[in-house]
Image (cartoon, rainbow over all chains, first blue to last red):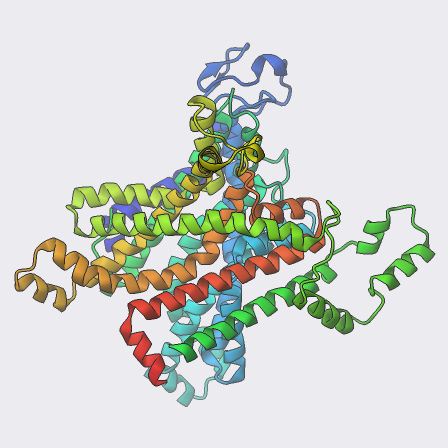
Length: 285
Length: 324
């Protein structure tokens, strides 16, 4: 923890994520939601920081329906972060289950699970995502399931390796000598010790999941309009790139900022949790 | 070397077989009856039954699966529902475009990424930090968004480069020099988008790999015997650091291909990725299935190439697998 607090990357990453999460949670407080827009033609395509006819300031301008981009960005953060977090949770749950079983039970089951993991890992994830998204009606829930189902492989491999080395440790032998059941040993003694690499994978995975959710929504296969998602906001800004570039630029910048924060936090966590690596390669930032 | 490659090729075949099987069963699992979709709402039950029989959809699932595998292996990939064209022709045209874009981008991002990473590993902390900020940002940028921003700058504002497609409207009338210039102008923006993102990932990895090698005793020996820093870097550090980089290349091939899908879509680049997205949006299942399998094959081929490369760079791996 001390290491982490001295790491500039961790401070930046955690700081950015805290601010974005706070803004998303407090969306009604930090933004304005006009149920009745008096005159769409007069308020649409206002540049950032411009005031509309009623004197209200739009910090990031308005889009083609006269909607405030900042408001949509803040509400979109709820979707983007929520979907990303839930998808990573699902991926971790699947990865933990597969990795624990493959790491603890020897024999053909292990070989089968590992082969399956390798095959799944060798597929282009976006192609799988598109395939799954094509088959069912697009929704936020589908995106979560699909991202979870295509994101568990790296977690499974990390956990498998960790469980395998832990299972050979004396404390596990001791537990077995005490007559504790295999399932209980795995659950109470091995898995808690195998969680370290999972934390790093989660931090890196959440950035990735947020980016992929935005990608699917950009293609129209994710969260459906009018619900704001950063990806669908970029897609709608695509048509107005010439006269209102801020509509596409703002959600993209937000996306980059959040993904950078997740990556830096993940890097810092990795160095803090694995001191042998940290001593050899000094942190980049 | 050869047995190892043969083993990898077998794994690759398993991957492709797995994907083909997965697509088949997923499509059967999905809601919606393809026959009703094909015939429309006015079809009579008798028509539906006969159409189902013609398409062999009334046979047991296992029989359908084997028949489908056989047709797939023979290259009979069916007809696109949306365009009415044979799927094989549709995708056959798309493969060269994808290979051109993704292949060139892979080469460029490798060269530039390794260069940036190597500079970072030997540069002063301030330079290293600045470059790290740049690479981590590039790594986090979504390809389609970067593409849109480049289009905004270079097409709408500077009016310098075309934003869509692989050839201009008058492409068929051009020959020789002007033809090449037209193709290159169309290539610049998608290639730049994909390459910039690739550089971010590769440079980050190369920097770490080289830093790991720099700390090892043989590097200190090289320094102690009076070699110039540049010599140490390129003759001793880079050679060892390139091994994990080559392994990473194989592993990052799926990601690169995934990035290519979005970039192809944004730039209307007529590649496999764009065809796949269009087919998904149109629910054009024969094209979706074939494009998925084809993507898996391209990725597996890329992985095999990377494996060969690793063996070529690292004599230890060559010997180990020769002995095995």
